[in-house]
Image (tube, rainbow, N blue to C red; front, side, top):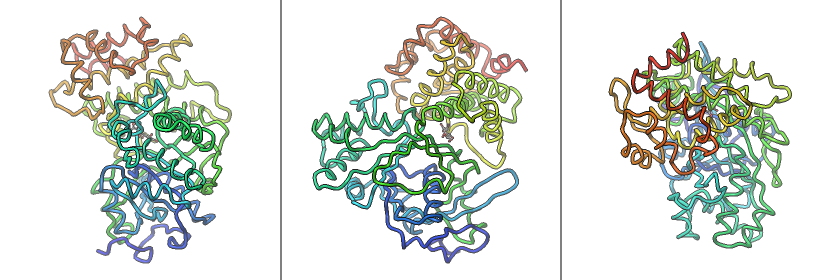
Length: 488
Ligand code: CS2
C-alpha cells in the first residue's frame, strides 16, 4: 500500500484540506507533539488555513522521543484524523504540520528564533513544565530545570528553551513570539509566564524584566478526548484513505478551545475551526478541570481498580456510573454560574462523551501522573465544597481511590505501575507505614511536599472520610466499598 506522502495519494471519502500546503510558510512551533496536539490545535490550525490561508504551518517538537518524527516526517507531516462517534467514523487529512523535530535541542532553538515564528504553543503535560505551582517559580528539583541552569546556551527543557529563544530574539531585534500553553492547568498562561520570567531572573534579571514587559502568555482551555492510537486506528485510517498512515489519530467529534485573545504578533483565524476568544478564560478552565478532568480522574482509579479497561466500560457499570453522576453534581455545585452555560446540560454532555462506544479511552492512561492532576481536579474543588458547606465526600472518594491505586496492586493481586513522576517518593512514603492502615497511608501520602494543601488536611470532615473510605477498601475490597458508596 502507498504511504500517505501527498494529498494526491488519498483515495476514498476522507476530507482534504482546502489549501496547498507548500504554499504556506511556518508561523508556529509546537512543543510536545503527541496525539492530543494532532487532534486539537493542529486540526484547528488546519481549519484556519483552509478558511483564511496565512503562513501558519507548524513545526512540531518532541522534546524526547523520536516516534512521532519517524511517523510524520516521511509523510511530509500529513496524517489522518479519524473522528469516531457511535456508528460512524469520518476522516480528515490534516496538512497543518510542516515538519517534526525530535529530541534535538539545537534544531528546536533554531526554529524558535525564526522570525516567521510568531506563536509557540505547548502540550507538554502538567509535569513537563518544570514549574513549582505553589511557589509559581522554576522547580529547582526538576531534572530539565537543573540541567538547563547548568547549560544556559544549550537548553533542552521547556523553560530553558523558551528563555534562551526569547533572549536571542531580543538580542538580535526580532519581536518575541506569543506563548500559548494548552495543558490542563489552571491559569496555564499566567503560570508559564511566572515560570519563564522566574527562570530568566535566575540568569539575567534584565531579561526577566524584558520578558515580563514584552511577551504575551494568554491562557487557554482545551478539550477533546483523545486516546492513544492503536493498531486498529492505523488499520481504520488505511481503510478510509487507501494509504498507509503511521501517524493516524482517532478522537471524538467534540472539540473546544477557549483562548484569551492576546496575540501581539498575530495568530491564525482559529475561529474558523470553532475556537472561542474571550477576555477571561478562568471560568471555562475551572469548569472543565473540575467537571471533566476531576470526574475522569475519579473514574480512572475506581474503574482501573475494579477491572474496567475503558471509560465506556465504566459508564456501562451501574455502580461506577452512579458515582460519575454524583461526582459531576458535586463538581458543578462548587462552580460559579457562567453566563450562557447550563452546568447540568454540560454534565449530561460529558456523560454522553464518556459513554461514546467508539472511543477506547483507557482508564490506565488517565490514571497516570496523579500527583500532577489531583491538586487542581480534586483538592481545590474539595476546599471550595467545604467553604460552601457542601459535602466533601465525592472528592474524598476520588482521593481515596487514588491512594488505593498507589499501593500498586488490585484486590485480586494484579500489579500495576504507577506511572507518576513522584513514584519513588510515593513508594518510599508507603514503605514506612503498615499497608493495612488507612490512616497511616492517608497521612504518608498527604505529607508529600506541596501536594495536598494543608488547609484541606486540617479539615476533620476531609480527613475522616478519606481515612474511612480507604480503610473500608482495605478491609472489604474496592468493589464492595464503591457499591455501598453508590447505594445501588
Ligand atoms: C484526561 C484528559 O488523561 C487525562 O488526565 O482527563 O487527557 C482529558 O481526556 C482531556 O483533558 C479531554 O479534553
